[in-house]
Image 1 (cartoon, rainbow, N blue to C red):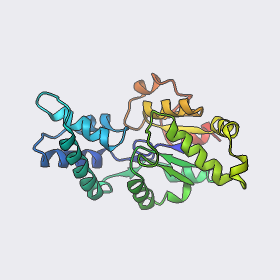
Image 2: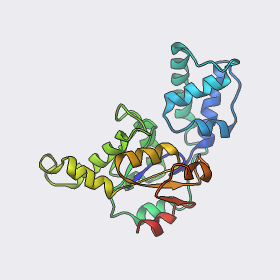
Image 3: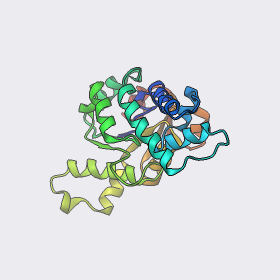
Length: 232
């Protein structure tokens, strides 16, 4: 089982928006509302900062490389301070992950691994996951399927006794078909589908149910604990 982080396991929209607005304020830009920032989330910090700076430019011009780099550095600094102020687990996350304790699980997120580990540890759910694929683990991010394939590979390697002998293309293809990608965005659904996994969209995250239906996931759920009914 593979899980996105923001908008799937955790509701982080306020802390992300506050961090972005602190960054924008230091750069002399106006603030963005929480919904706008939420719509920018899902492609990693570089894209989040780029979209935020473009949206607050008087002429909606994208930032140059220097401004973009400053924005990323500021975002990292502010998010390190803000990321646990209001962020919370969605209801029934712990109980549901515990229910699936016999299944191998990974987090596949565009957030950097260092921040992901801090968040998982803070909420006491790191113990449920066998692997993390973050935005800095591989050179690609969702919707590219390769982060999902990397997670499948990591879970498969740790599950077999002789990975060098047993891990091949056929094995990974079979493993992907037995895996589900759970997420709240079109990027999650497209990455999972491209990797050959089943896909499960959650409607309580950063995208609307209508937006998610357009991605044609295999399953749509409105509560995290509905995973128990769907993938028991």
